[in-house]
Length: 343
Ligand SMILES: Cc1cc2nc3c(=O)[nH]c(=O)nc-3n(C[C@H](O)[C@H](O)[C@H](O)COP(=O)(O)OP(=O)(O)OC[C@H]3O[C@@H](n4cnc5c(N)ncnc54)[C@H](O)[C@@H]3O)c2cc1C
Image (cartoon, rainbow, N blue to C red):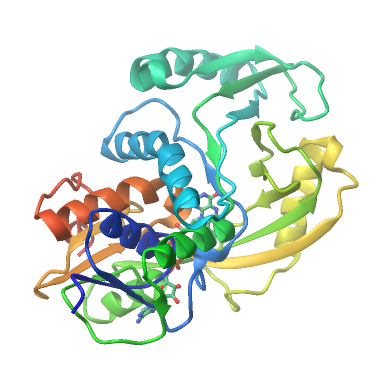
């Protein structure tokens, strides 16, 4: 008999399983498609903050989670001997015009207030280095909060950490103990079917990997594209955002456009070969925020869904609040993140 059953082995399910195992619970993880078969099996992995202004519970939760990421991934990697590819080398963004420059300077002040001494947001002159985005003003925003993880490798590392504690991901099994549903888009569709209003839906994204070694350099956000220098000598570029799509996993000309925009924004990538193309479907709730908590009218069942575009950034803190709730009965879920908020 297990204390906890986790259904869904994406980054939410695996991270929550890990948080429960760390607290001494007995856990089983069930996923008919295997680990990282859904949107967590991707390649981008930006752990990047929202802009530091108009503070709200989602931004505060995300800040906590980004600050937890280093110790979370370090411990996961150490437990199973995996390599999540986590690093925190900050981010550079070009400043296109005087209006954006003014905004960037205001945000430097609000970041100081909101992020306190944890990280900075500064306007700096471009240095002309190869690994920099083209900037019309010659100025860049540099923040030191942004980190990155390799999504597919991060999930593999979580699987190894769990295995080191005797937990393997199985294709089927019966509910035992408290049951958590971290079933991504399939879970949202299941909930939609039982309600008169839409609770959530999938938003497809496409991304590519380029062969270019910028390990240790800051990530870039330029031309509307995340450009992520992974620790393994590849660079991920992404992503499209498609509400309407025919095939959930096929890539097409929209990805060619993303690659083109990345090459224009960062000329040093002009000849970098494309070594992989990938598409997945992000679980997005109606409120766009994560959806966490007990499953209403289903005693003993819980939900963690709605990671949408920042599921990897949110996972360390989502794991802790769900372990608090399921194992200790402590409810630390912020307003706006509750299951009821989306019903
Ligand atoms: C192109 C793209 C780029 C992205 N970039 C970033 C980024 O840069 N930074 C970031 O933080 N996030 C990013 N994301 C978002 C992030 O990947 C998601 O938020 C995250 O993967 C969601 O994790 P999840 O565990 O909730 O869902 P999923 O990973 O989709 O996992 C759900 C799992 O449930 C399983 N399942 C389904 N039905 C059942 C069932 N009945 N029983 C058991 N298991 C079931 C599935 O097989 C699947 O493995 C990106 C996503 C995409 C698609």
